[in-house]
Length: 388
Image 1 (cartoon, rainbow, N blue to C red):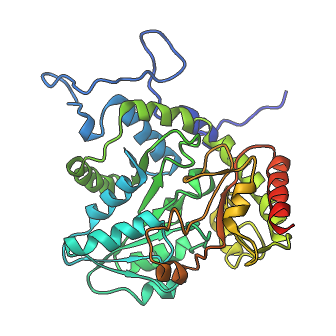
Image 2: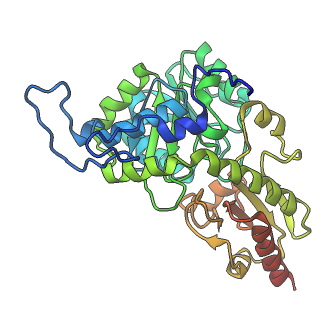
Image 3: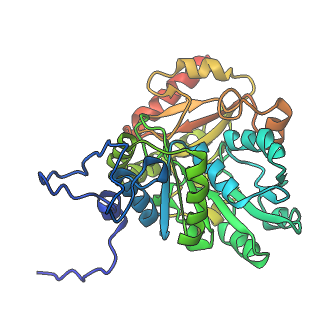
């Protein structure tokens, strides 16, 4: 019998299932119990638990699991992705500070910056591109944070994570990444030098279109600042939602691997279709950042976007789909599609969307884990309907 060498560290799939789990010492159940209490003892206890302090049993499960998957020292769960983003940014920025944002970021984060930062006296700049020089050009004496998103929403732009981290360290600047589209299965930015990784856990971490949550991971030192800000801002997650999120993360690895496989096949199909002007997917050799993606990603993800030819009505195309659901969010086990101009980036002005390359012909497709032939057949029949 062949001997299997002992491993000092557990594998990713094992960590998805077991990291942080609570042992059911009363009944021996196979899953973590739900502790729904909002009030705990305060006298003669080692830890004073309080939901707003991110330390109820189920909150701690997710904090530990996220930290392990992100190769971080600590993590925190939040009630939403935007709660995670806003809390983290305000933890490291104060009046008079300056922050640099990548030009392509999630529309909700963009809107947060545009509407709120001036009220807090925080200066900000958006880059003109995603090359290192685009970020370096924006650095000021009061720059405290660089914020990136890769792959970006919705154009799947790839930013060189390691290069940005090295630039920031040279100038003693904190780096924050939105790692939602990649998930910790496809990308672990802290290994490349990034300080803090953020997720909308509503997406791949949740994966079943029934959870609203966020997550942040980083060093103990950085996460202490996020915790201090978070307990004041109150973007805390319920124990029941933590329970659902733990359930979902157990299958994160196998789900994301299937998302990766399906999306690559669908991207190649759309890339060859005459009715599609352009496909945005880092797994395609034609993607301008394909080589960088290969270096920093373990898989190319389940998200892609594509521009329909100008003679095709994007709304009619979506209405013609039978399997793929026109839907607001992404990263569920089911395939969904949307128009960024009407949803994720609908709060941006037409000029702002145009500057980011977001047209009314752009569609963002979240490729699910269905049989890939069924996904392609649905795209094919819908395209045939709108061009016939």
